[in-house]
Image 1 (cartoon, each protein chain N blue to C red):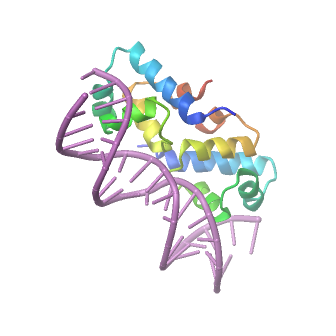
Image 2: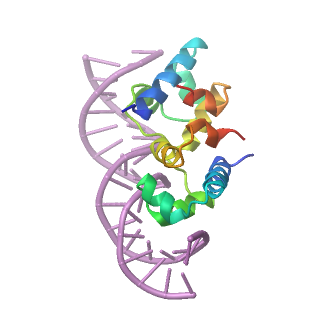
Length: 69
Length: 69
DNA sequence: ATGTAGACTATAGTCGACC
DNA sequence: CGGTCGACTATAGTCTACA
């Protein structure tokens, strides 16, 4: 059974790294806590769609980019 | 500014209705509370990605279907 | 069948500190 | 720079009841 939290976290990390952005910078852009970004990328947090939306905007990607598995 | 909760709720309602499924039945299939489904469709709740995933599975649609605006 | 309200428990999301 | 811990506050998600 696929874990959506893990899959989402991996997407965030991959897209963030492809843009050479640090977790710290992403946190600032998305107005979220840095430690929370860390947890998200490591598949530990079940984020809300508002948070998904904020991160998508911060990385300038459509939301669906994070759910294409 | 677009409200992601409202947009998501409208998608759930539209897809659910297109399949002639009641909120009650959707709640049962997704293993969520019926009143919660009602709130979601009315744009009142900031659902988690696990909940989005459950609803997507219950309606037999890929997650991205709910974020194509 | 659906919307809403209120009271409840679990967890999303913050923050400071340390490695 | 990123992972983790612990304590915290806000809200996700449940449930009963009534229109």
